[in-house]
Image (cartoon, rainbow, N blue to C red):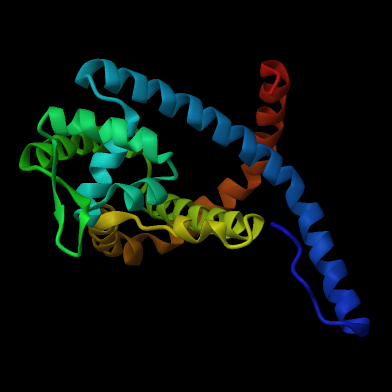
Length: 236
């Protein structure tokens, strides 16, 4: 992340030096993370293409419809801003969703020139169906993981998303305000259920978690070496 201003004088110089040292130490991890995120995006893109072929609707449709399900009716301008999409693109996709009976329009009572968009019951059913398939696929991937590893993954992914949003806001001088995570009711409910289910395991397996963490740390250098070699081979 970008260096933040520190106080002046000797204390400021020491703080700045520590910050620079921390950034230098994290560069190698940042390179590995960047490469792994590229791999993740490639896999997710392949999944999205398969889902589009099977369900005849694309990633943009699912995202817009999902936002309407999670956050209620809203104007197309707000939906476009929150989705970081061009308004013309959103308008075309919404028109398609309306034609298919997945989204409905109604006049905005506060501004008759405007229109509010909302998911229909059929649209909500489509979102539930897609998310059920997606969640099952994720569950199959995570099934071999221990409850502690799954909880740690959820925590760290959420933290990474939050920090990326904050970094984006700094880069854009406030333009990233709309990027503040708004994970939706379904996500919050899933997180709560996951945490409640895992609390019963943590008391009995805390010592195993510590051993697992030590084993994980000891293997990090090997994982980084393997990832670096793979990156050179793939030419990233």
